[in-house]
Image 1: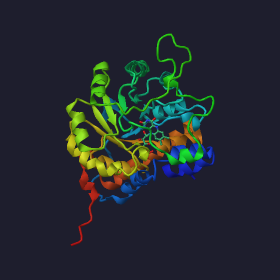
Image 2 (image 1 turned 90 degrees about the vertical axis):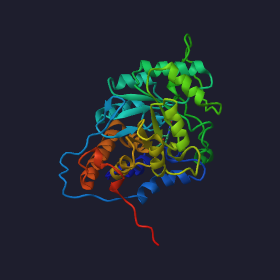
Image 3 (image 1 turned 135 degrees about the horizontal axis):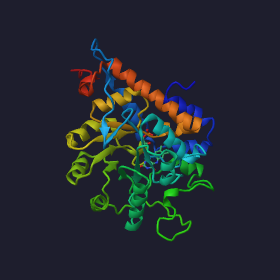
Image 4 (image 1 turned 135 degrees about the vertical axis):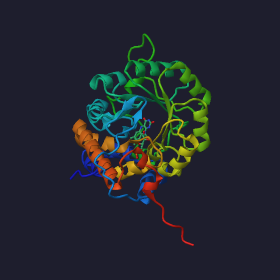
Length: 354
Ligand code: FNR
């Protein structure tokens, strides 16, 4: 029975090639961060208020001009066609139906233009790994802009590719024949069928972010800033937002859970730009905890791929509806009547034993 987000993993595993299921589920090295993301949410306790008339629960906040159906985004994940033949088209339609922003991965198996055509008018952002060849980055930004993406999410935690030992053990290094990263095809004028590899570049610096900001009028968010000093630097340089993320535990293993880092990042940013968070969000209560600690919205990664594998577009729609119900229910049960109630006061801290 599909009662919650975790149930989708079990259902998806019955349909997926186990090698692909491992690719989705896995993290880097010992997978300590992968486990920690969910464990840290589970360690936090909520302390509700009562008798406050919660018939009007606070609506989702407006993010770069978009008022979502709920404070949830689809974090960028690669290779949706491993989960469903329609791939990112199906995901995009489900996101549109739920009124949530889909962050299209640069490593999508459908081009961002074709994703836009599948769900016209729906809000979408584009995730970018800046490429060492500036012309390629510019071409990708142009492609995303033409497809109606309204923000760029630059992933900065990947100077090298994370080491997923499950993939190494399974010999999973490449997409199966017939699938490719469609955003990387024909990036230069006059090319026909040329596919470029996505390069993870250790050369990237803040200057690349400055240059990207100069080259686009779209808001630029950084995904993968974990240190408060880097968060301050991002604000100083005029970055428009942060997606606090440890890549779902797929890059540097043993970094802390994002929810444990959130208070420090929120302090450093001090409300000057929105901070979003992903990593281990599986329950409506997780969403409430993240909002209470200062996130403007949360992203989900793996649950989208599991739901896509389980039931295609309908699967993702049902999964998002379950999450929406859980958030609504958690807000009511916490006694939240407006955004001002979503503060750390809704979290319980046990007294230190003396
Ligand atoms: C990812 N993630 C990711 N991030 C990114 O910036 N670009 C990408 O192409 C991908 N691809 C990708 C593939 C798969 C299979 C997974 C599981 C993750 C990371 C993703 O955006 C997000 O940070 C995490 O997935 C969030 O954690 P949860 O919700 O999966 O726990």
